[in-house]
Length: 94
Image 1: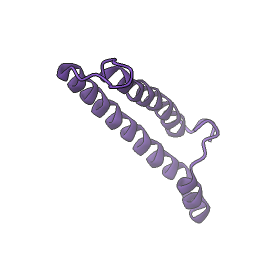
Image 2 (image 1 turned 45 degrees about the vertical axis):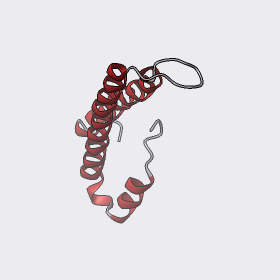
Image 3 (image 1 turned 90 degrees about the vertical axis):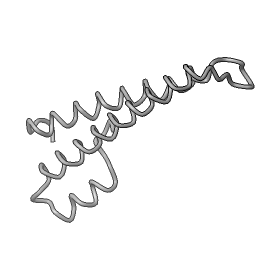
């Protein structure tokens, strides 16, 4: 993500060099949407586990705490993909 590289997008860009901006906008929009879906699904799962009261067998901590890693990670992915998406829309730093 840091170097703005994605193997499928790069492959398509070499096949259709004239549509670079449009393809980047679509790819970054889909990535933003995907990370947002993962964020909401992980929040729902963590909330469900918190209400369930399940604990891990090894550490004896509530299971919703390890699931917060997915919540935080997908939230950070959303902001990064959104930043790249907005730059692609504004035609900055392509």
